[in-house]
Length: 104
Image 1 (spheres, one colour):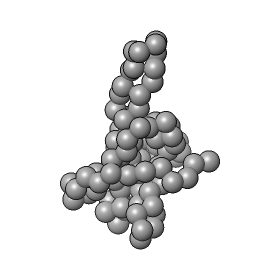
Image 2 (tube, rainbow, N blue to C red):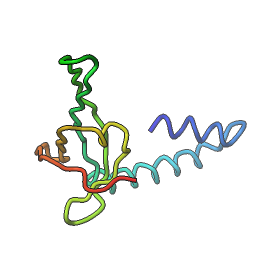
Image 3 (cartoon, helix red, strand yellow):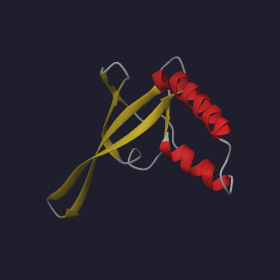
């Protein structure tokens, strides 16, 4: 939320009226509360062979948004496209395996 205020201050040179900032802060907070249940954490296990028989493995953490009732998730492709394993953590803490269905 502080980032939003900083960005807004840059967009409005000088001191914006406090009532305007308070109103925007409340509107942003309302949007965040409505969107929160659809935000998920994605864990992607990526492996890369750096030398013959030497494999570098790392976990990439991303966020995503559930966009369909059948569990479709929209996320940044970086880190997901080459993942060997994908897991999604739902807002209630449950973890589920996932698979990449489409990429651009």
